[in-house]
Image (cartoon, rainbow, N blue to C red; front, side, top):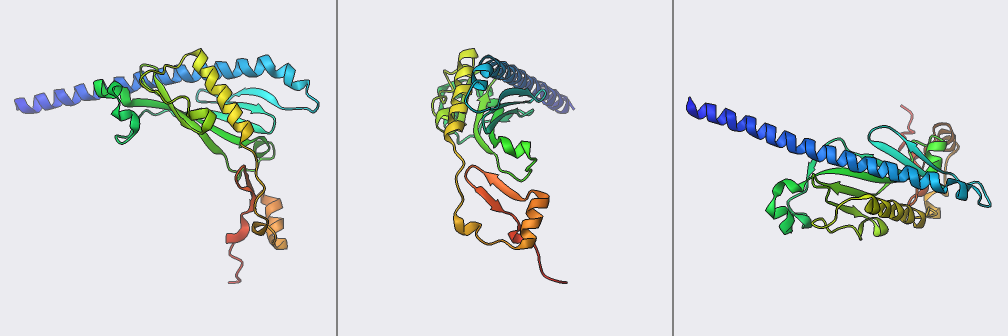
Length: 233
């Protein structure tokens, strides 16, 4: 009987400790996300007038999409910053798990995640729901505000020192600038001609009616009607 009491007590203590840890990570990540949101808004607001004086009209704005999302629209691109509401543990085979920082305190391996997605602005303007977006980076943040980024070139390569990197306003600005710079250099490519040279009248009509031309920076555009069942039954 005594053993059952101890087991129950241990279980409750584990529930409390794990739950409080995740809450702490979540609250820290949300605070960091709000710092990104504020930084993004300031960046777009302060420079909007300059961009709008360009030779041709260029989009340049910030949009708050609620507690877990905001968007930066510049030129033909949109960056979506999205915070996941759950907390994750870094996989055991990940490089950061080998650091003394994690080995000293395993709770430091629990992180919130902020994703950075790149879409074409026209995908939303014309409601092309089949268009492809790309995750160009994801930011891992632990309860001590330490972070590292998995990402592409300007986004991720300079921000991978988890034991020593702490997110502050300056580092947030650097990540915002790096994300925009990477996006500007990540251009829309023309698809191979052989992929699109033939299309039936029916496929074209279906495409125009349902916006089934999928566009993505590394896809160009392609028809999605290839798999339609056209047999008579």
